[in-house]
Length: 514
View 1: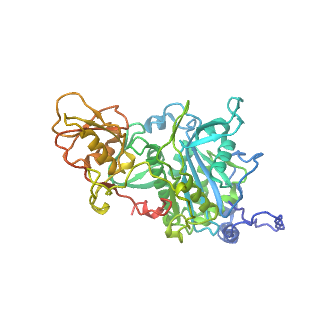
View 2: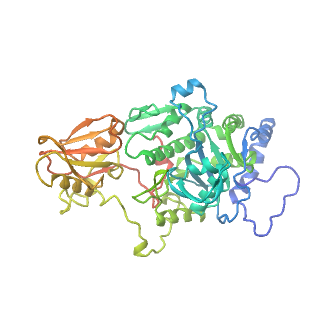
View 3: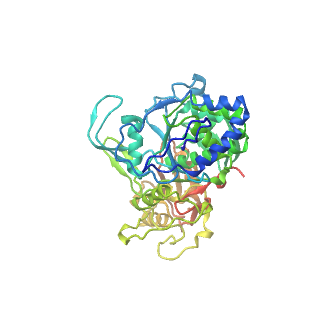
């Protein structure tokens, strides 16, 4: 973040030729800080001189070469690790934080603060993103690695903050201004210091791995409960993508809490919250007291609508890397446009200004969906027009996020293919290879599912009127449809979502509690 000028009488250093000009909001808030913070007497002075004493420092930018141009605004790389060495045994048991840490990044977010201080754009970066690491030395083992493919979160395990930052910069073309690393302990303490957050959910959320168990409605969460909420990835077929959306909802709720509770206007409370948070975070040497106060001042005019959230656009098919597993790949066209918008300090939603111009693209470069036609484009037979999307049955989980294996549970030839085609045309991610089941004819179609993906199962059953839901423990994320003789057609379904901008972005006021 920009460094506000100090309030002492030492002369301000002149700017070197070619050095990017500091954003206007950083200079503007310096004057306000002198009046509001230092003007608070001894309390303000204490805040100014002691906020950053507890920060664990790292140098992610050391000897970094060939970095992207700075662009406009400021870019903060926020990473969440699974370090849990400072949590208590009671917290470990209560919030199910056992197991060995992977020493990798559990969460990666790129936060862009606009040059005018009016907007924060948060882009979630999937931790399983396909990435190619350059030649480097492993910080843990000292082993020299040749260039190789990994999941993005492995960059931290092999090269720490330095390799993480350089990898993100190389993949996005966005220059990182500051690095902030949060672990389980700092996360919980920050939420508790703010007095908790309020999370709303229109549907039940349950994850047996993290212990999350929310009924539909509004919930006040402490730090441990909020950690369960943002860590849960076994709620439905959306897995990590669903978890990123919940992390974005949490951040919107945290901004709402910080800006509406008076913390930013009270030097004593601001110091308490900041000191608590910084006691267990790691940051670059340039992120200190003045940057925190600059952020505090900038956020005083913030509301949930001042923030916008999105995720890196993906293509339908990922890449399986030997020894690494399944990865997800970024859409080369859409992701390039997204990061260009950040570099040029343009909003991601129409709520913050005009939509970003769409550059001309050749037909060959146009991204194609791997999920099939949009809901409502075809009927169950795949030949006739179905009802428009507006009349589709609303469901909790997007059909595109639900993996389905179809079985023909009858002696009728071709029924399995008919059902697979119909579900695929409605948007479901079917295997496209229906199988035949053994046994007598089924009279009633059955949807078999793992209880951990019950919302996905209900969404699929809504597309198969009259079908029976049958829970099968440990079945996994793929749902099974046993087509019976009662099958007639697939009903169009669609997930209810907040209106989104061109990059799939939503503003914070669309996801916080009303």
